[in-house]
Image (cartoon, rainbow, N blue to C red; front, side):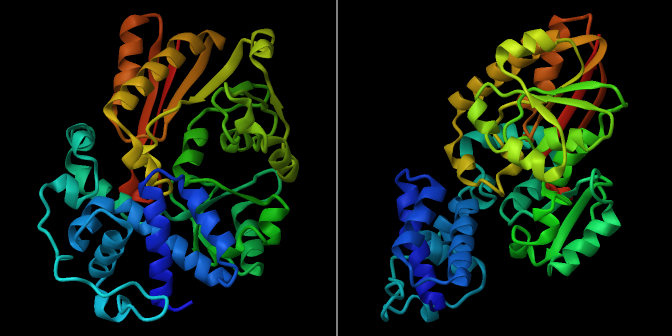
Length: 385
């Protein structure tokens, strides 16, 4: 495919997404219809689509409209490209740019920085002086991070194994198990280091949330909102820790047994009934459902799907998890609340409200990791009674 044909493909996929199609479904549908597209073509088109989704508002202003075509015109202009060379109308190229498809001045900082207008007051109040840097980071692709599986490797041996697979990685400052991939990221999944369980894909801040826990041999630890099980596996990499995983939607954990087998880790999955039988736990980690604002670089559609009503629903869910799930912790144990959000509404405000209602509990640790500092945005707080 020519560069122009890749842009036209991205336009068609974006048009589907903008009228409601799930991102991955739209990308997969195009790939199935386009057997002529090679792996490099598919990767390039995917990058176009995700770049445009991260920057919907600013690209629309630069490209003359909120459509797949407008976003890709805006993307070309934002990246300093020559629209006349791409938008030629020849063969599979998009039609030439029309006089009406002009650059429009940004109406607000929220538009320029690609944050929903309704969310901007909360976003900026949460981040203060870091607001521009975080918003600008969310406009860019996320780095690729790996977690060294301590059951099978250390950082040095994992880096060497990755290098043999054609993947270059270096230590990340946030966590001793964290590596940042600097070259060859598309080779990870097929490499021996990954397939043999020496490394797992996991953001450095997500790893740091686990590393902040004072894990000791013999502890019984519950990953309450386990999802795909990334934190469960990170917990299980600490020798002598007994790890349990639970999620209200058990289907989210369907890949966890295979992942644990590859990692050489033991994680016991619990149903809701089994939770009652196994409590209390020394540590309960709850990475609560949230806006995902700290990971919008990876899932940019979530930025535009979030509404004020949905945010309110999420904060009620978060408050409910804190109020009800802390009962699973033994007296003197630790409840670790976490989100991949940068919003105070979902982070400090939730914890502060819980502590005000439950004076027998006290906070012993609180930390945020920000997108502008080289990871996803994460928050965690440790509570004990």
